[in-house]
Image (cartoon, rainbow, N blue to C red; front, side, top):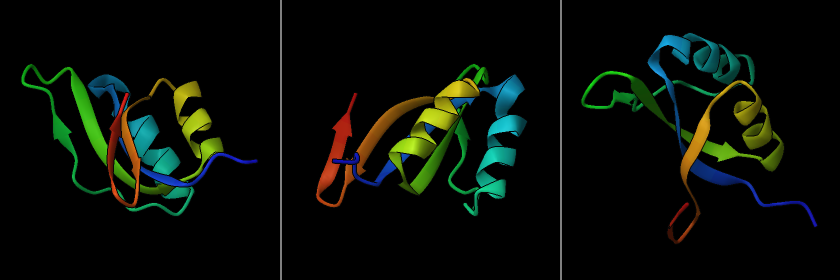
Length: 77
């Protein structure tokens, strides 16, 4: 059974944020709710309706899924 589509908070090193933004835009996502860590080294993005395949592709470009959830609330990792 395929893993369900979830909403997620994704982080990536700020120096690599453009590669994450490019991936999101090329896959039809909008880039919104981005914020940075206190020291500016990490950028966070909220991504809605992210498939298991999409989560794996993001990991391959260096992103980390820091929180994900289905409808009903967060499932922090």
